[in-house]
Length: 87
Image (cartoon, rainbow, N blue to C red; front, side):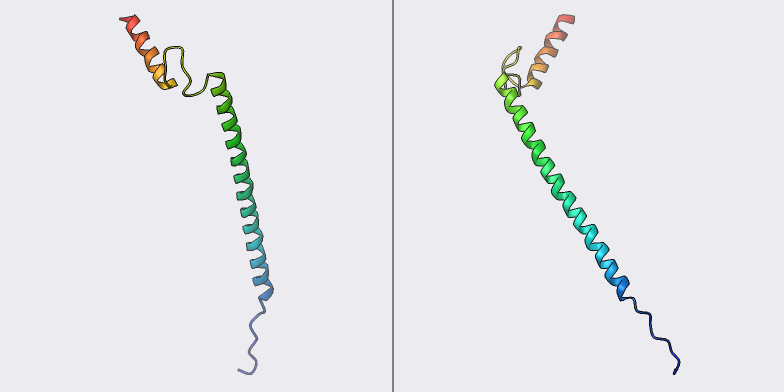
């Protein structure tokens, strides 16, 4: 009992572990911020493209060459016309 060794001092490893954890966490938070900024920029781009296509009359909700309605409805009308010609 007189010659027992003291436990090793691992305080520096603990501090290093916390530092690594906080650095990785900060990088993750920064990547989330950048991703959100890029998504907002993409959303603005898509909104401007949609506004341009509506102004041109080619976007969703614009009158089609087959009749009023969305592109899906116009495609259905074209399909019915095509199948009616075949029979």
